Length: 112
Image 1 (cartoon, one colour):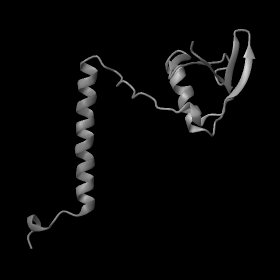
Image 2 (cartoon, helix red, strand yellow):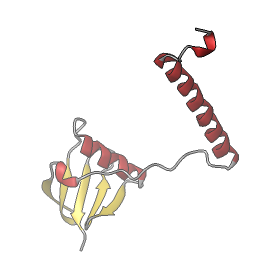
Image 3 (cartoon, rainbow, N blue to C red):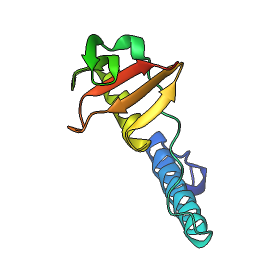
């Protein structure tokens, strides 16, 4: 067999594919930079508040629910990240959510 007739190995194919992807990524980054977009907008963060433990509390402005910081709960972490991306407060599914001044605990109150 001649060298030109030897089939490409799987590894060679993956290496060439990786190089092609790198070229495409560089081209995309150049385009975004030239168009003035320095950051691609983040996807909307999804979280289900029912997957977080809420404790009923009474505050100066009436009753609310509190979620204590939970570093092991991915839903809590996603909710905290989303709140921080919205300046520490947002409304979702009829509830007003906020991050306490400690930057970790989350409160919610039914919107009336």
